[in-house]
Amino acid sequence: MTDEYYMLQALREAQKAYEEEEVPVGAVIVLEGKIISRGHNQVEKLTDATAHAEIIALTSAFNFLGSKYLPGASIYITVEPCLMCAGALYWSKISRVVYGADDEKNGYRKYISPPASIDPLKTAAWPFHPRTELVKGVSQEECGRLMKDFFRSKR
Amino acid sequence: MTDEYYMLQALREAQKAYEEEEVPVGAVIVLEGKIISRGHNQVEKLTDATAHAEIIALTSAFNFLGSKYLPGASIYITVEPCLMCAGALYWSKISRVVYGADDEKNGYRKYISPPASIDPLKTAAWPFHPRTELVKGVSQEECGRLMKDFFRSKR
Image 1 (cartoon, each protein chain N blue to C red):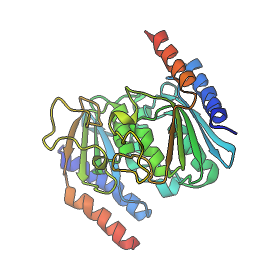
Image 2: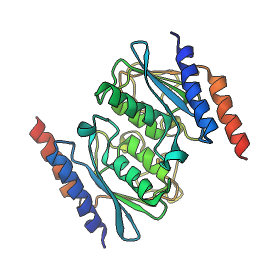
Image 3: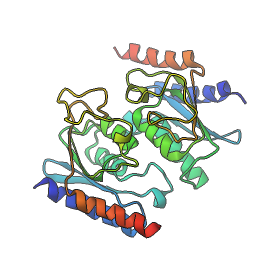
């Protein structure tokens, strides 16, 4: 399956968040071609500012595998992770982070700016695990549109 | 009560972690002079790389108050928060972050370096909420000693 396929699954999670009046971010974690966990933003429902899609998907994947690390796994996130989620992804040692739309307001790159051409040796400005691969811009338009629609509807 | 008093309560949490063979970090959250939540590192017990003392204390405080924000509250953490926990503290809008020992290996300042004299106007290199006050070095020696003892015993 392609990155676009898994991102579509993450978008379905984001759509659920949208319908629940949560900021529409979704995530799925994939290992050996199988989706092992899903998450969508539940900050309002759980009254918990840390209940982001990524954190929910990570905790679910740890539980499913009985492992505190996720080497070999990929996470697909509809929107650029925030600083908290970037830090959580670091601890998970996940192998690939794939995200759709940029988030200029709350994305981790507001605080940490890796070099424009990502250095394979990684630098101090690399929040993820040194072996983690980062891919951005997958289905960017659809992922971003859901966010724009949400915030427009809230004005 | 003084900052040292609440840090001693956080140290008790860290001691619990130590006894459970977890990296010995503890945290308590205080609102209007009362401890409303406690947490210690449970990464091994929960097999969850995100189960840091701060995240557990935050989630517990959100539940206790039925609120996703913690304005007016203070968190006492025995060790400098990591990037994930700094991000979680940002989202919580907590008013004061007080920590004991520095963590050069995993502390958020490895990635984000605020100016030496913390600018009251805050800068882009400030991971917390703009209104959050930061205090460091409270009971630094005791907090750091527990970490050193732990890692020495693991060698």
